[in-house]
Image 1 (cartoon, helix red, strand yellow):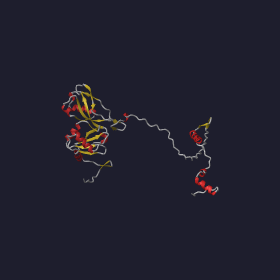
Image 2 (tube, one colour):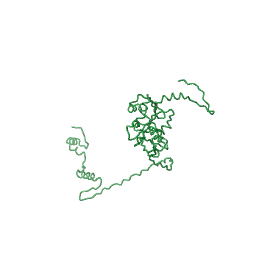
Image 3 (tube, helix red, strand yellow):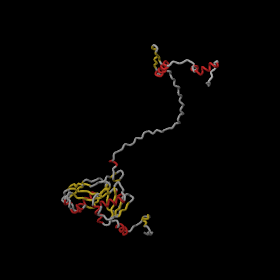
Image 4 (spheres, one colour):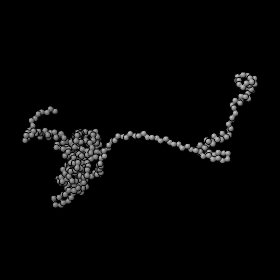
Length: 315
């Protein structure tokens, strides 16, 4: 696409780009079969959206999907009939989250329309059959919002329990539960309105999907006085002086009974055994060399020498 310089138009000294009506209509005609697809609280991938359309819109043949960075999709169908059937099929959900589906318009503004004006299906139970004409339904729906269409059962009047309409509703305004209807004969009645689904709008955040006033209030943390931690140098610990343990000697208590000595104390058993062994084996006080004099060899050597010296090794 090659672009050219076109001189702007100055309006009150301000440069203005004036567009041509014919070109705007030609470009808008390319998107007449498109819808706006927006999931409240989620932003699915294009692959996930393709799987969703295959399961829920089997009558659609290969639509084009375009993603906008504001979080919504533009889906362009092959024919106007496919677009109309998708809009008339009812409300949709993805992963238990409601989906906003609305026709594309050339002056579409996501921030102003999707977040405030939402197409909603509603029922008019017990509506008199004389009020089922397209003009009467349009007048009743215009009190609620901007009427878009009626479902097939309402159009052919195959279900007479209630009329079902698709109306673009401004969710920033109070929700209507009934509308006042006046017939040509002057009879007045209140017509009940039952929405298939109605989004929650937060007046604080100006967004749909939640309400800050309905959320449980959490207790605010009460900030107390902050104490500053001051680090002081650690004092040098003085070496501890270990006092010597004074052992008190244990003096065994002895009791003498006749010739026996009874020892009472912690080592009574050892002391008693030592005394018993000393009394049983008397100590010998003889000379250890006395046994040599009883040897016949030593005696013979002594007698031959006649001396008092001891000779060893003679036979």
